[in-house]
Length: 192
Image (tube, rainbow, N blue to C red; front, side, top):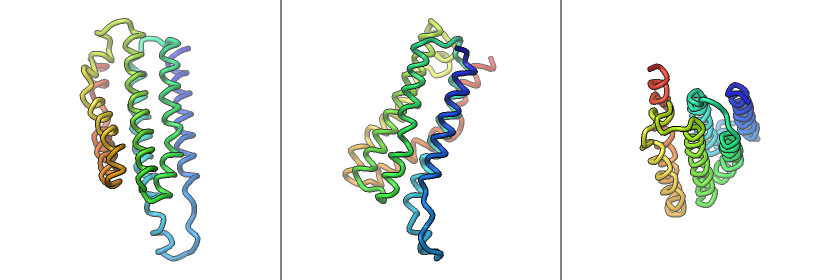
C-alpha cells in the first residue's frame, strides 16, 4: 500500500469524526438567547475537540510525508491512532453534556492521552520502517520534547479533573495552543 492510500483513508476517517461531533450538537429547545446560552458547555467542548482533531489531521499529514514506505506495523499504528481519535466525539459529548463534571473530564483527558500515545507510537513506527535513527522524521522530531510535554500535561490533567475540572480544562487548552501553530520541524527537514 502506498502512502497516498493510507493518507486518503485517514483523511476520510478524520472527516467522519468531525461530522459525528457536529451532528451530536443539538438545536436548543426554544428561541430565546437564554436557550442558546444553556448549550455553552457543549459548544465549548466541541470547539476544543475540533481544534484537537484539526491539529492531529495537520500533523498526521506532515508525519506521513516523511514515511519512506508503508509497513504492516505502520498500518496498525495508524489504525491505533484512528481508534483513539474516533472516541473523541463520545468523550467530547459526555464532557459537554455534563458541564465538565469530574469523571467525564477525566475520561476526555484519558482519551487525549491515549491519542497522544498512539501518535507517538505511529511516529516511532515510521522511524522503524525507514530503518534508521537518521531518517527524515527522526531528524525532524529529535527527542520530541513538545510531544512528551503534551503527554505529561494530559496525564496530570486526569487526576486534576477530580480536584477542579476547570484546571484540567485549562491544561487541555494549553496543549492545543502548543500545537495550534503547525509543527514546522518536519516541514523544515523535508525542505532541506
